[in-house]
Image (cartoon, rainbow, N blue to C red):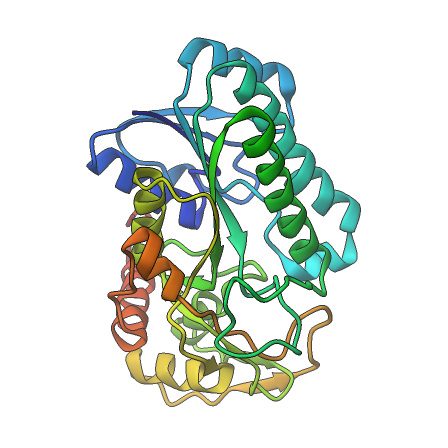
Length: 313
């Protein structure tokens, strides 16, 4: 299958691109490298450096390649930035998606697998673990644009027969995550600890998230591509872990006796997040395989090696 991976130089996107190639698909990555890195790109496959909102570039690329499927991961992914600049968030996450979908429908696109959000899709009034049947009620512009995107995908499915699956991801972590951004507390903490700095926790640190390993997430994209299910599916572990526990686990994995510091709580973030994954078992034949302990160890090892050799992939 000829597959376009948007945001394929990013953290999750690069793992998805790797998985697609390993399974024998033809892969083209489009990424503007604003947050992704060229070093994350797979050694095989094609790469186009461009903004997904550039309709002329997207149209030319699609006419040349005639993609069968699209793994859509390019996004403005920072909750806090979405609060500070909701216009930019909407331009990237909604207009970018529509540019791709409009071009795709005119040029034979059959299937879209979309990176949506579970963690930012719900507020604090929902039951935990949260099932897909619970109405999404996001409290940040980032969560709102992801929810709107799901509705556009449903429209394209109904109106044009385009197959689609939206994966509502938990808090994804693992090798290649950006340790300098605002997203990805595990990567940020690992980088700080390795540099001899105490991890800094927003608020009391008792806020919980559903941490899911990036390799498991890449498998979910592969499963969604091969299955016929259309709709939204949670991709998480159904286990809550708080930020204090994450800091302690990373210090242990890295052999550090540093103690976390606490700062002000962040705006626009939910207190708890935990995703029910029963539907993923049923319709994607997917379940998480990597435990948090093993995933944190693998992530810590990656950042330790990268400290010595920045070219480590």
